[in-house]
Image (cartoon, rainbow, N blue to C red; front, side):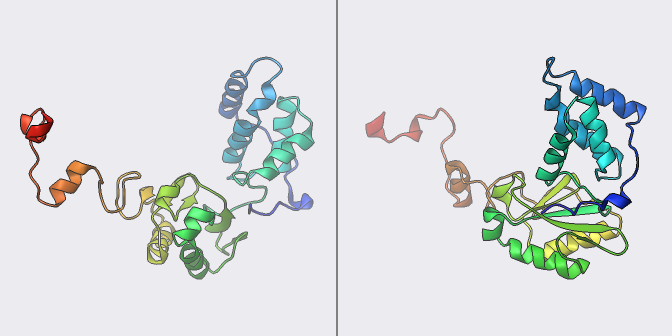
Length: 222
């Protein structure tokens, strides 16, 4: 569920890339062969959104369409299909909660409840102070560390209710917590620690022969 689109009467009349972003846009377009410039539509929309306080007015979509010689409706279709594009203003912290199957099985309901309770808003809404917008999204790509949320460009994984509330509190204080697992595990390592045979033996207190030792195999197998 993406943020709602902006009423037509509230849309800015024009949009133009800054000089720096225009140079970046031209470099993106140049990556594609002649006649295939439309392939740059997603990175250009992302660039425009980042320039415009994390949301895409219609004027920005029109500018991208004209740069790529695309029918404007085609650009609107792209912008309305992907939840990464916001067609209305969003809060300083865009809290995107994954509720797809892996996250749901691992407790995303508790994450959603904590967000609603802590922020006092529901999906598609923004807090009165403009600090937080809450949206529901599909897979965020870190299923092994489910449940997870994404806040702007950062992902936070291995969440539960209390850890979600602690994260929101930190963001409200102006902090930017380190992204990744909120339980401290490295990357996508198993939650209980390494599962290799050597690691299991070490945890069990079993001494293993050194590498290359003849004693590593039973006598009958040598």
